[in-house]
Length: 502
Image 1: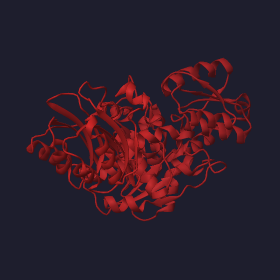
Image 2: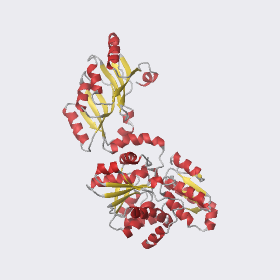
Image 3: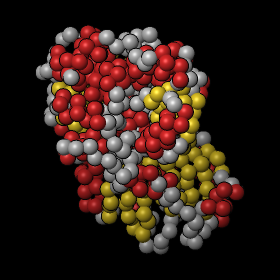
Image 4: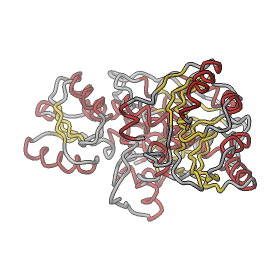
């Protein structure tokens, strides 16, 4: 069967629709992790993913009668686009069943390519079950997204191109796994020609059906799958892909959401392209594997397998990339509610770049502050927390707390009965060390900061919201202080939103 795959891959009919995608060095990432990272740019295909290879190969090998009846597919999006494009090239009908959770960008793309979209269920597995019903009812031919020898062979042409493009040493090839079609095809080809190259599968923590299946020695069905990486959200891998993966794949890496977000940022910095979560998984896996095995000077290939990204997800990705890269640590710090403690805490933070600061006066004795700081290594958050505690500030490290990262950071604050004589001002500070301390040192020590919010936006200035308790007799002095400071500012004390929520 394996030599059969070699022949199937070598004779695949993919180049009517696919291009030989570039194999490019990622110079910045390579330098940072001290290994050569090569990106196989499947995001440059016509449908922004490798999936058109397998879909077209399967459909091109159908009998004319089967093609005339039309095809049906179930897909979270990328396979759907591949089938729709192949159908338009081959002149046949294509019905695509997609989960209701599919990104709108993928649904729209399928329709643009002439596919008939049916939305059903919340995961690929739900859509697949519905597609099987329609297949029998309308006598269509099912084009499986991964568990089909022709589809696997079409995806295997990615491996064929990698060896042709880089005949020199390759230590490992990293491949994202959903149902397993891509890794099965790539591994079946590579392992017969270059068995010394390691094939390493990459899965997410919440969609690791292939890894669990290999460990169990049988296909395992997951009850639920995480939907952040919708392109790999598969509850059960294919029978054929499972068999080939067990036979040829050397190892697995499991990555989390933050690591994927960091990898999307890495690829953007090197290529100015934005991969979707599934598309960046192999990069995240290569970084994690290199760190865990202390690799240096190796040549690692990561298949950048898709770029069908919903634009509105980018806010979440950029927020989490810093934590995924271990460049940001976040803490809950308790400080005594007394004059000067805020300044003392800022002095402890020192020259470190603050990424976020949330504070609202709430208790006469203690203040709870949510703070994010830039770090340069995974061990740094522990040292920072220990330093805060040593100086009398109780500290909780929230760097790996999912609730804190997703929700809490946006919800710190609220109304306060203690915020009497509060003036609310919005400032723009120059984004450089010392800007905040200059503000604090110039401020009258009798004025109390009762609210503070800052979030680093990556610009050359920081946007800051401050509540300051100023006695009515000091209002003129406060206006002079603000004017002399020279920072752009806006008085928000009469803002209706402030009155409603703060």
